[in-house]
Picture (spheres, helix red, strand yellow):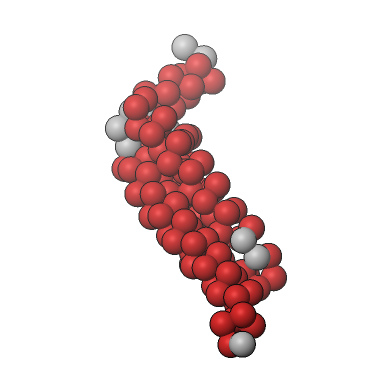
Length: 112
């Protein structure tokens, strides 16, 4: 058997080398990190910074579920868990940012 075919066969059969699971884990980590950093950038980017984290977290969730259905993998589970946490926190930060903005805009009417 040729070395390239043998390597391709070993990569397909090895659940530790599942590319979708690895990407799900990386996007999950990225979305979680940006979720905790996004309130700092909310002054500059506004509502777009938590929404970015929401999209990246959703991508991690989708990739994690696709990779998990193909082969059971700890990396896929990590992507699913971190993506879900990121989505929930992003929604919470977006709501807080929206409520804070509404409260700030209503402040002159409340004070008068």
